[in-house]
Amino acid sequence: MVRTRPLKVALLGCGVVGSQVARLMTTHADDLAARIGAPVELAGVAVRRPGKARGTVAAELITTDAAGLVARGDVDVVVELIGGLEPARALINSAFENGASVVTANKALLAEDGPALHAAAEKHGADLYFEASVAGAIPLLRPLRESLAGDTVNRVLGIVNGTTNFILDRMESSGAGYGEALEEATALGYAEADPTADVEGFDAAAKAAILAGIAFHTRVRLDDVHREGITEVTAADIASARQMGCTVKLLAICERAEDGRSVTARVHPAMIPLSHPLASVREAYNAVFVEADAAGQLMFYGPGAGGAPTASAVLGDLVAACRNRLGGGRGPGESAYARLPVSPMGEVVTRYHISLDVVDKPGVLAQCAMVFADHGVSIDTVRQTGKDGEAQLVVVTHRAPDAALSATVDALRGLDTVHGVASTMRVEGE
Ligand code: HSE
Image (tube, rainbow, N blue to C red; front, side, top):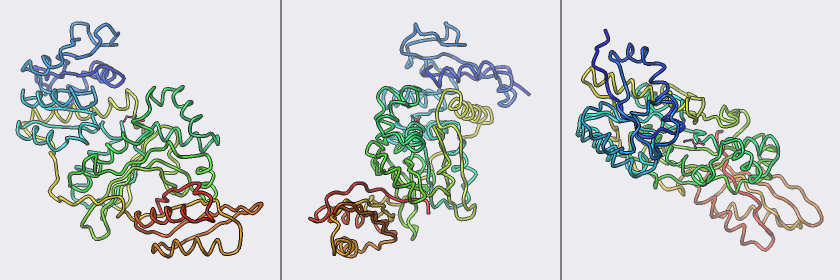
């Protein structure tokens, strides 16, 4: 039974994703009405530059007054696709105050201020949905929040940034350096003119904060996430990874400590074995590997960005929010009851791959090995190649706290016989 009064949607932002949301709302109108139980229509579309062509959106729906659109009183759901902290935060709060539910893709705002937004939604009896904020089209947050609500998630290991995966994949397949691969990503439209948010890991760190918060029922903010980007990854690192049967990926890793009493969240490049399912994630695709007590290992894979794929996730949330409005219920709110402390990076237990340029003479290997031993770091493998009195020493450690591993590298740098630390990279996924 489809009721006749339509549910009204205010769309904030009509760029790559917003224009696809508007298109799908038009082309799928009948199916959406049947699935929701009422027609759903655009009340207005707020944009910054009104002159630009907006595809299927009727000119009379376009406005530059986003605040006025949100506050007009008859809007059921506000879809926020502006991004950034302000004015998105003020508009979302105004939406709740005006009785609307909110669907957003705004990972930066959620990672910065998620608890306050959830509290505002709760106070006004509204929904806050944000599936599109992490990994584009991939159904990930709903499975974590709902399908795995009865399980205990111990680890989330993901490739959640398509731009950096594209760059690393190009470096891997063509032997290109970072700069050359970035140029190609920019020319093909994968990297933005200012790629900082992607290549320095800010985008992935915001997504890691959201994932860790949901997975561990604990508030995790952007500041809690250790972040390293891919700008220092060299063609030599990728070649070294190959020699070990590994590839290099920018990973978002959220882990529960073995004793279950704390969690960690981090983003950094890491070597993973070619046999790991994440190693086969190519180009700009995303994938997230989840380990849970009862479910075991799960993997979610698909397009992590792009207009139509991200719009698919937004539309799924829109349907859920509309159904709740008709049925009178609410979707899941924030679940942060576990209140686990978030440990610093130094306490993360990981493995290092370290490549050293050393003097090739008796006793150097023993001297380097002693530095590892002095820091309580156990060596797994050592490979040495020598030429003309110089040698390259590649050491892979066993698992140890990151603070001990990093102190080991600092001490190695201080040895007269070590000319340089050519590369240091964590090894994950084993
Ligand atoms: N810039 C992101 C990426 C997509 O490259 O994956 C939006 O989160």
